[in-house]
Length: 146
Image (cartoon, rainbow, N blue to C red; front, side, top):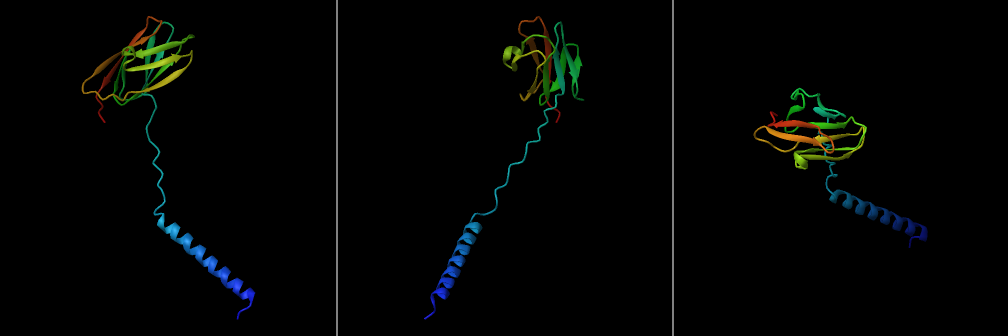
């Protein structure tokens, strides 16, 4: 009959082999590792900036597909625009009375980004107003050429 040290060594070996088999079965049954979703590649660089000043509004053009003429800018429907408060007061800017967009309260110097996601089949004019100020601008959204 084997001595107790040999019996303990055999028992330990059997336990180690058993644990290794269990770990191997669990690992192989899990399948392939989970793939992380891709990072979105949306570009939120504004194609045009509507600057609200104390006396007037003006469009600053950044994109090649944007046309600005005075207080009117024309952009494709999938563009991004920015509204900048260049006044020394709190303002609220809305497109079509808040139906197209609403910036909410904008403190002096603040900027906000607006993504134009509504699909249009024909040019759509959005009238932009500034609460508490007699200022207006227009945004003409055209079907995308992309």
